[in-house]
Image 1 (cartoon, rainbow over the protein chains, first blue to last red):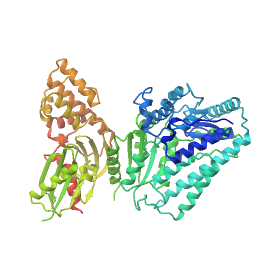
Image 2 (cartoon, rainbow over the protein chains, first blue to last red):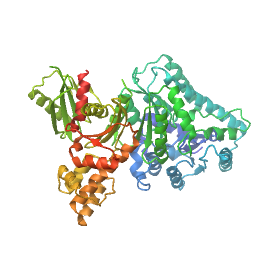
Image 3 (cartoon, helix red, strand yellow):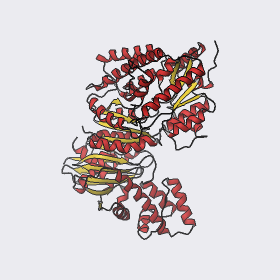
Length: 383
Length: 254
């Protein structure tokens, strides 16, 4: 058994966050390994089967951006800068505890940031094919996953058997279904919880490393909500679907503005919302690795070119959740989402769905303008 | 006689419009917002009182200082107000409203009298009135003089979008001995190009293009916009009051 020190910034965190960090410390001292991830494309089933705890290291705070800008260009996505800043300043205990960081070749900024992270952290980058419908995409991604499995087995002296992979797929699918059921409650005429409440809960559950406990907590919440009314929900408020970039770092600013304007967020299409939760590998498939590869390639992220999944899913989700309008959130300098925004605007126009795009970052500089824009957008949806 | 009040507290000026029940404008007021929109709102209330408008009028506030008007019965964003005001001013139901304000430039597509789509400049001040004000100051001109001078210039361009960098660019043009009218031309052109590219992102509603906000009083800005957009652009002498008028129209319905 080994002992681990806590990073110096530990005391700066709230008690709830500290409790999460202490759990990871405890798990590490019990011999568990920790993998830090940055993306919905990370095949967590493989890390589960290898016995790793997985934790998202996506930076959501502006606090570490000045440190990151000593090495990174200023005109870069705030998520990448924030994440790298946490690594540079050793402020994030999860980054600090990570034995391995797993990245994928998604957007250009992240790819190059991974190279820098890899200088002093064990790093593994999976090469994600970006044409999901190319004839060899599935084969290539499956091969990449097998290469990753070999790397984990060789480096960490673990055995990743088919049985372990199947068990991991099954458990993660139970988790994904539980998340979906909870999110689907917001299809109701009056959603039982607000977008803020839903997002905050789902964000927190991601830092619960006991998957069975996390699943139970999600299910408990779902069943307790059948008769629940939330003060955060405006009865009769306009229904908004959020799409675009990961929103962890701008969620308070944007979702808060929507709710203050008297509307309700009924669906998060983003990568922490329904998009990846509905991509479930077939647990009965003959080849579990191929099944994992297949499901992840269906995530409609803008790094794909073209990105037909997002174009198909978005109007369907608008119907399913009966959204009155779409708010497309682009993080500053996120080229793929910001450029794709034009196609999404067109798609919404063709389907007569009111649409608004916002480009923002982790600062509060534009909070006033965002309030106005969102309130104006909600006004255009009618009384 | 029933009347209604609309107050538009913008970043530079507070604009007030009083209308009667037939939607006729019977009083307008514009004063610098100053540092406190709460004080401005109080000052407006006193001036309304002085002009003979008592206490119990329906009032809607808009603009970035809209939450600072304690006697407003309702707040509505400037997007909706500008659209309503412009429809009334120009007697049209289908319009593309270009409002070049102090800190924001808004482009609003209005169809059948309601907002169809809109765009505002991002947090940077390129393409706003503030940009022109700062450049005018650097050239030691008033805003009106800058616009008049620009009409006589040409042949120079400013490429910086950032106000601070553009100011350095202007200073280096001055240093190079470039004629003042050419620099003024480049400054206005820079705003017009930025506004035109934003306007291009919006769906064309097929209606008339109109210019509102403080800058519609600079005739040359309207002309330059017409040239760049290839369409006629109309203004009104009450153009800077479009937002306040829209607020007053909404107040009339309260």
